[in-house]
Length: 244
Length: 272
Image (cartoon, rainbow over all chains, first blue to last red; front, side, top):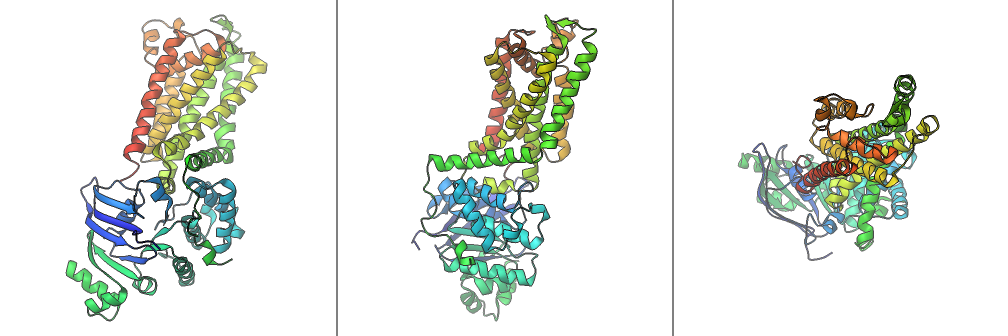
């Protein structure tokens, strides 16, 4: 662990071309090794925030640092791994190629990428599907592949945008196990989810956002105390009602 | 093996450097070329067969009526233009469809989020079309040589003309792939602009034989200059001085390269 935050956002603002203000002067700091949850309704700005951090949208104003480096710095990008909410796999590549080419994009040598891809296929039970193209995989297998791809280049900060959306309960528990072990080994995790029990189960710190603004941030226990609530669901309802 | 093995060890990531950064470019170009090879019946075989049929049908059927053009057998005369037409269409189509597909399916995000520089992403995405066009060009030449005996009188001019033409149309393909909102948009430029201009660019005839004003109008066709550059490389003759043909093609290539570079630099249309 280092004293440098894994992720630091200062005054992050994003206004889309149509005029929608998705993030409004957003400040946030996530420490190295933290497991951080971002909660909010649809349209709260969660995916916009993640897209800004990962260089997928043009920000309107503000600064983003990854382990002390500007987010557009190639070294900062090398330290991040992203599993997006939507399944965005290359339809022309099979499972092994998806991982190996991704490793190449992040500067891994071919032998290193092949070795690492085989490790990841074993970890995520994808070895039997190594030669299968993404469109032919089941929904669960695609989710595993997305996660394997995000971890392929050994990032220090892993961003998971609703990784368990639409998956069955069994696979959700399995993914929770993967993610928890990843965190135990020192990887910083930024997780967005609609499942409050998921945030309560996994996250050390939780932020509630709505309308592109931060409403509250604390540990799940701290939020329960400050909102005088019995569950994170109660906290969520109270926070959103207060912000509406 | 357990999930814990997927966890990064601190310092395990390769140190940054020139060689490491180039691996991204090599990997992305490799992915684009792999796509071309996986779909070889569509990307290579189909255009080679179509263009070779032009050489056979037009060359053999018309060569009885049109003996010589600019001192060359008609069968040999049409080969440079047909190879040029097949190559530029392949370079454009490949890149526009590959870039559009990657945006449509959003797997381009995997590349945009990576440590690759903007110019590396641009170049990597362009090279698939270049390789596809070169494979088509070489295959057509090998098929055409035994039946047309087309010479290569100016190999350096030929190389330069092909390089400029592929740069122009590979970049144009990337640009249109970025702007396109539907498959129809990408196809529109191919079907309504590139194909008609190719046919009217002196592929099958010498523009100097056209009556006025069609001769002058042909000089406004950008593909005319590319065809002339390549034809000079093969036959050593062209309808305009080869320096002008190469210069205009280079100027057009500069515009499309600058356009695609700006799109990647600014994120315009690529990033909301």
